Image (cartoon, rainbow, N blue to C red; front, top):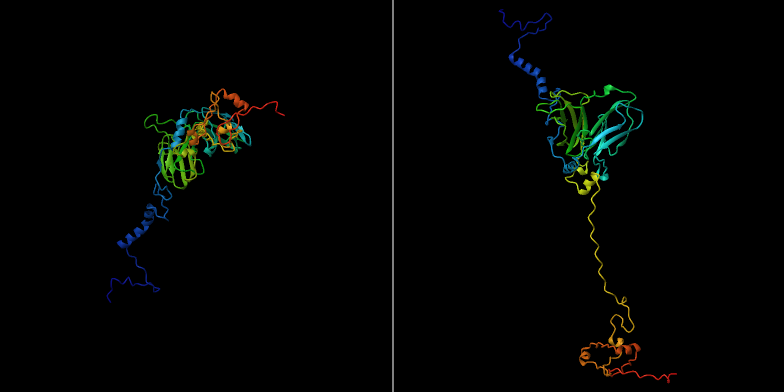
Length: 423
């Protein structure tokens, strides 16, 4: 039998099983295997889940702010207060304890000396100009007195920073408005403190548990090298990262920002050199959680404008006097009642005395003849006015006029009585 080229395909081993045949891979199979092996790196490059891809940074990252962060102007009331205090130059000194003191356990007293800066507690309006006391990089404590009772220190070394603050919490950046000392308890720990003269970053605002927009972003940078004296002279920069979005700041100026998301916000501050490397770590890297609540803060300095009274109270001045009240209206005189009129003898109640009651007899003329009453007056119904003369006065005083006989209308003289006939 002739042999076929495919006899080796059906070749069996001695135990009767067919032996495998090794063939080179076809181009199609090699292409499929290459795609399968390259799949994990491709998925990782696109950030697909399950492949350990790096999280994408920027506005499209999950959990970032829904609106871009933007700088806005401060509220109108803030501008009002700043204009009133801009001429002030606070000068602050820490008189006790001394720098480098070793304090005992328990509360201790911080004594300060302050010039040219009012300390005002405006009650329901909040604080006016005040001081802030900050231990290490913790939350600052606002005070309006130069003698402050401080809590007991934990063992080790601490930084105590005191600075003047505006009513809305911003730190005053004028020279002499900030002081820092180093204090210890139990024993000093130099490694817990930054080297003397090295830059330090302290967060000033936001500092409350909750805040509303616009949010004040403010910080203190101590012992930082001077820069921007000439163009391109950048020795430090502040990198601000908010919810994954970053930007750089090269000036120590406060920022009023919008675009925070409601609820928790992740805030990271880093002091870096011009190449972006950390500068003097770990004392210049701070992380804070900022809670945004639009209804949380109703401070008066958030309003568009303060009234004169509010401005005076927040600045510690005497409020302006209230406008004079209008004088009360004069009472209208009431008409007299019948009971208020005093009735004189011979005068009818509620009216004037009648001519007959005042003078029962008509006056006489010069010739002794009684004057007759004019007919026109009688017809008109008006009583005639008695004509009083000097001769009639004695007769009226003596009451010598006799009663008028009924029906005559003419008064008659009263007959004189004889004193001998009187009993």
